[in-house]
Image 1 (cartoon, helix red, strand yellow):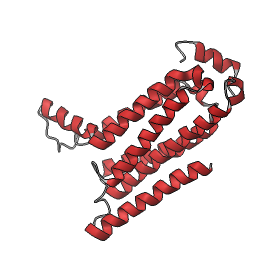
Image 2: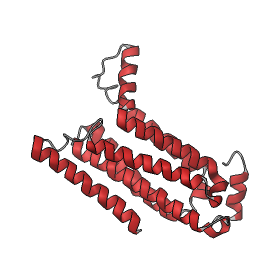
Image 3: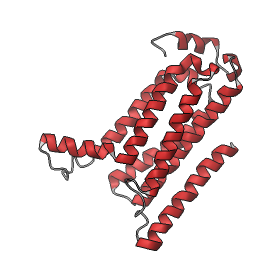
Length: 216
């Protein structure tokens, strides 16, 4: 809990400082949020930290029952970090408009990049649903992911509605911080479980689900 507080609290403070710097120096709180700027570097760093944490968890004996989840999740976080740094979803948006000969300011397709981000969330949701019987045994991670999802959803709403760039990216940073804290909590729980799945609360039913290729 202390680590999570430091991660989330520190990220929130950093976000405020970045917005304040933009306001004080350029009269624009969102000035230092965007591609390859401090705010984006912070959120990308948190995603990379989450990817690395998943890699570490994958090597833990207690995580062997659902090792595929950690590998796929690590790959997803890595991709999201690259997307954050290089705005892959925005480039895909422009590419689709170009290939289809559409106006990128059309009211229907203008937010195609938001739909792509939403697709990322759907992939993650499918992954979690597929492994739900085992993930529910990691309570701190599950509880932390709830506000992370809420912050992510609020970010998407602001993006579609055209809200403040500083607030939008601030929500994204807080979401990434919560995600990292949640996965770090899972790593700690599974590390303490050593090589005994029962120690981390994995029931025999969950183990049977994990051993079933269709359930894992």
